[in-house]
Length: 636
Image (tube, rainbow, N blue to C red; front, side):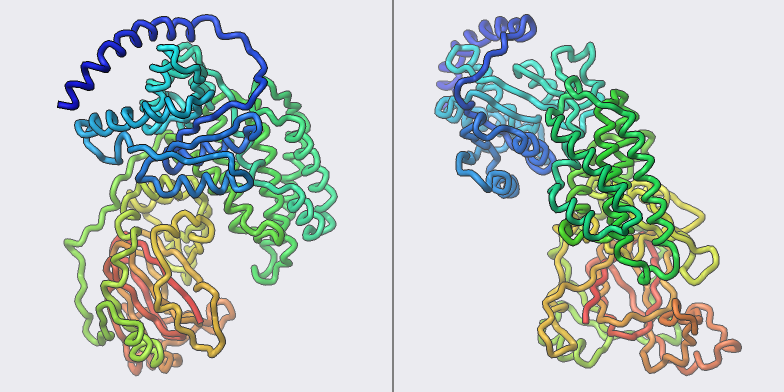
């Protein structure tokens, strides 16, 4: 009864709106209104999406003059719990804002049929909201949530009930075509802004190209702290050159605050010259980092590599504003992310800016993660073939104790305190990683553009073993989704310090709260990632700390020996490999290593959701039977 009545009431209004809309569209496509100076602040309505959309629109909000665009009203969906936290961070110094919730137009994977009704509900909720607030400006960047309020604003404007300007900024990830929301909003918005020149062509003549790339790295920097790090931490041989370069970059950005490429005046010669000088400093630092043992390298040179990476990224970022070729822009953007990651991997956290590099890399990846890759092979779900999987105990090997969801008391009294290796089942069911990380597209979106260190070769004790820095997407394509003659292994890497976004998908096991020392140890365990195809091998070795090896997906076979068998497994006598054994448990050479017959070997299999406790100094040999992802937690 209510729905037919609403249709009767809305129908005549819709007819008037359609007539007015024709005039409105003609007006917008025709002569643009004369620019006038505002004498009062603009009441601004900002529509949030979720994830990347929210991050992008809040980056724009941070550039607004808060006095001229006030008060600010944020619209978010009722199922979005994260966006409001991000808004509070942006608005931390002011209270001239509020957050209003409406229903989501369409949930992820919701059917198109039911989304008709949820969108209609969101539109109905937008009518009283727009009428009550009557904003001067509606700012959005294309999430589905923005369609209902934009439609209502368009309708009210057409009926002369409001005079709200709609400014639509297409997402940075849209390089060659508009999003579905963008194709609708292009005709509703007063101004459509695109961030790639290819969208500013004959197909969308009203769009305005503004290159906002210059803001990403520069906005993450606190310049006074960066100058302090440069002055206090760099070797004298590099300090003078880098300090002058950084001053030129800072002055340029201060004098060119507008991100509009049409108004930026860039002298590319000084950028080229400073890039050459920065590369020379990077080369010098690289030489020092690769001289002798890594731990013996003076920390100042690692600080230097971090600072050089930031300065090079700033210079590259500025240079992109003079570039209008999409392919070259993407190429430069990838180079920036790669250099920042090299700074994370080879440099050191700056004393005054400890999270600067990781923050920059995360911001860059959020903007770039959805940009389509060229010549990429799509990988959906990482395939785990278990048909030929053998999980039986080999002759001569003993099993280890097995527990299902042991209590903390049981773990401490029966496993941790006596230092007994144990297989723990059912302890990781709450981890989102168990489901999400098998989705290669999810990993590509979160980690794909990031550079990671890969071990290439059968095992690190062999002559053919080497290391390489590659993007995570390349690693997925070359070693996970397709067969490769050489095994590639992302092994013992602190991936989650480099890319904190992945930490949301798992948690540190409570078992790690126990300590071997009487002192209160509040430090988090060392967390390492182990990701590779079937056939990965970690030779027999031991670690100095307690170890919980947690299996996210895939299967592994582990062989263990007690510390009592140290002499029987024949450790290497060299400094670098003193924690590694010379024997191969699968192919024992009793003539060469006769004492191996005295050693007692244990065997177990790790399946998804299992964790294995390996006590300190226990020897363990690990083989990946399928593509697998593991996380290890090391603690004292």
